[in-house]
Length: 419
Image 1: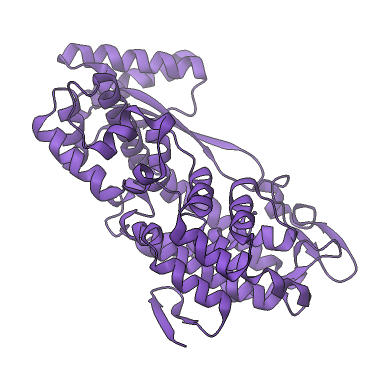
Image 2: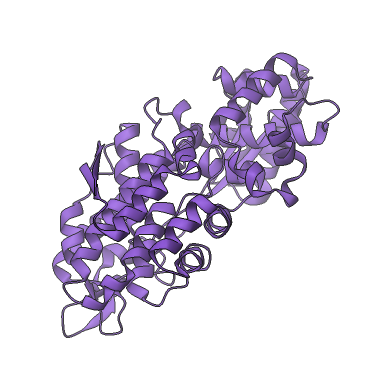
């Protein structure tokens, strides 16, 4: 029997003991090649160009999510002893929930058109070094873990909520971790208070004791602020747009004009038939190497797009969410015309980028309060939470810095015309 400890910058020492069968399984999963690959996937994608400390990995985050899930389960078994039977399912699902992320995490999903939930489930079902430890723990468990991650299916709704809900262990960890790594001060949570307030509702689902209401309100506000200040940051949106154009350009040029190794060829021009080996073969290192090669050897405009990204010669962005969609398109046309006047091709340096601000969604894993007598939706008890349900968008007009002053003046004229 053995123990090992991961010294986490947020949670302190995370110790695993192989004398516990579920933790022995976790140790084998961490040591597997598919999980070690997560060391080479940045948690926040290209956000390191906005926040220079944003270098943490999906590996670190995944271990943190497992740690929180283990703590939460210990709390919930005080109310329902039968949940101990779900230990292996919860431990594996919380640890492996991001196994299917491609290069640059969520930005990579947009770049290549993949779903990390689908690939997480596929790796769990098909890769021996992931499937076998789970099956050794309990026959049929790998399919149960895959179904939970891909389709949200679980016998226990409380366990499902710990993995995916408005207050799951994933969100609790990434808000704290992303705040820490970016230097943002919005992501400070009363984690102990939240975990001490989770309970089991009469229907077997997850609920919050009213004593934890303020901590959960704070958590939901923090989540809103982190999306506005970090995840949907202007420069982050510019970088994501630039990366999408870069991959799109490489695909359009085709393999006769653009060099790629055998793994990247499948990611660029054979994504519909991507096999497990080729999926796991790609990470931030491979993508970054190709960007370096393309900067030096690819034809224009791909070489220029790579140079912009690698050397942080980024485009500018002006907010246009106050415009109607028709006015935004008119603003884009103005930007394109100004760029054409400089001799550049606007297809590669002008665009609109719109993102939804993720608020609280009461109908998608909504939170409930349970005081032992009454069960009700959290937004019914909290005007503050209710106010967070309103949707919001951020829209940016992306353009080269050479036309920034002219464009800003013309947009002022457009604003006056719209009044």
